[in-house]
Length: 293
Image 1 (cartoon, helix red, strand yellow):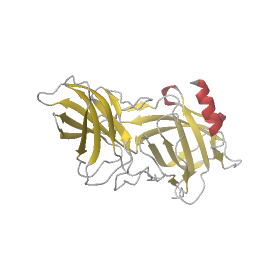
Image 2 (spheres, helix red, strand yellow):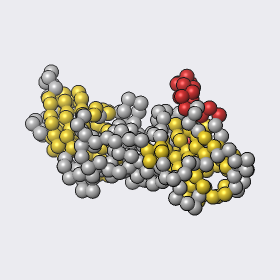
Image 3 (spheres, one colour):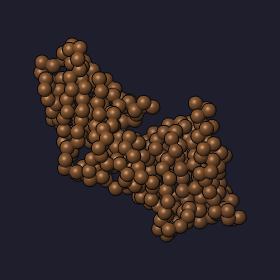
Image 4 (spheres, rainbow, N blue to C red):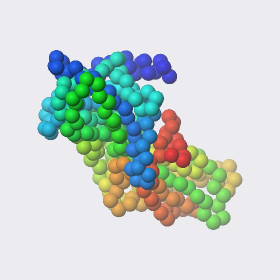
């Protein structure tokens, strides 16, 4: 994957800038971890080759929406979450107070671009990460700032089990109808405004055994979400198709939460006896969830 990384570096080379101030002689480095909020509050380094964009603004003013950053650079994660500037970028800042923000899509893909503190339109199926730190004092020639990312999207995990008299062999396919795309993220808060309606295009869920997973933009609605399943059961050569409504928990599907729905498959119906907020499940390159976390 070294070539991919170099290609990524080539295409990202211009995605950095600095204030050009001659007083900016302090080298600022970063390392990044990802916090798991709900169950364990554990932290783990972000994966190698993950791209991260970091912004530095003059602190003590809410200026991410009105001024250009003092410095901005795209970084790639090495072992243990240490970040190295793409195209040899290094961030130099003067002595002073700064606000830092970092964004990532938790992969080797480029993070979304921001203008005046607001991101471009965001998509479903992406694990958006965000971190912010206000009023951080830079006062020495070399400093390493710790970044602790949180998830800004939301995640649905469905665990299928067989009802009485059903032999559930495997999942042939699964699609879900996620929220309308196009919401934006606020750089200073990491908040993605929740959609209030569903989109029109179903999305394929990651399949791992009898568990299904999809990462989506936050959603605020009382209407159920449509799930289409094609299941191999009872040794029938033809898969059985189900179109079912997933009940949305009160309060919607909130940013940073992973929702585990237990689903029971009967001959003609799928029911959802319970939903729990769980630890976020990381996914592999093809979108399949990796269990356990």
